[in-house]
Length: 358
Image 1 (spheres, one colour):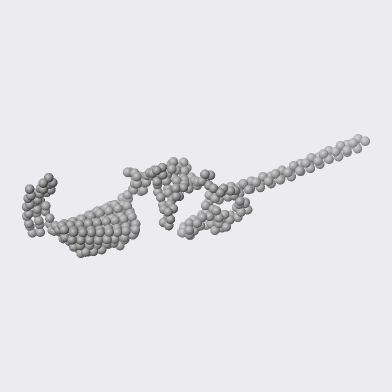
Image 2 (image 1 turned 120 degrees about the vertical axis):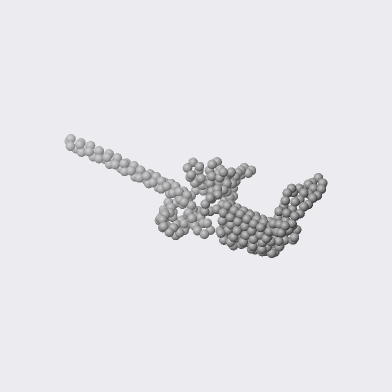
């Protein structure tokens, strides 16, 4: 059974439909009122709304003056009043929301969802999700802004939430984040997964995880150091099982005494705060093992200074012990001489007494 009632008005179509087909039934009970055009099929597009654009192809356009100025833009999904309003040759965009992507004339591959999302942006490959989410600069590309009034100010950047107030707390693995970024680790195949930083020029990476309640630093899976949960002490790994080529330190006290502690301030410190330490280039000439480079500047592994201090104390102690032994030998020799002299003096005294008795 099939029925179709159509009532035409100036600028208004009122349709009442009740359709049935065998076992499958499609029913619309009531009126469908459309103010403006309803085009389904031209250029393989769907266009619903008054004053919107019907040019281009493979588009889905719904809403008052949505994609109004579109001429050749294709493969767009534009839904909402004034969404994609001035776009003329923009392709493969998704605008959903009142005024979403409103002033983007030629940008491609954008996703803008929310009331006035991407309102001012005029570029391509951006993702703005949330009411008034947008770019600070209308020409930024490949940017992401997520959240109410989120604003991103640079290309190839991502922002969560607004920066001026009502800042978001982001949780990963938790449902109630207690910090700006709250990350909960997980264990996969007995491997604890935390935060990883991978080098841009190689596959080397550093990982920051908590193991047995210690904040641990790993490089390519090898533990390098940890921060104690007891007193916050930074601890470098020194287990013999992790080392090879162990040998005695060959530096002498004279080498160590050549170190020159200095007082200085850093060039970038406008307040000229004074620091104390050593100069890496000077130390490198004496102890290259404790000088490292980040590819641009030199630094000093100051924990190595403690090892050198131990070496100096050991050598100084050995010198003191040797000198003490030498002094003791000389003291014993003097004592022996004094003892011999005392014996002689006693003998002379006895001889004198015998002479007086005669």
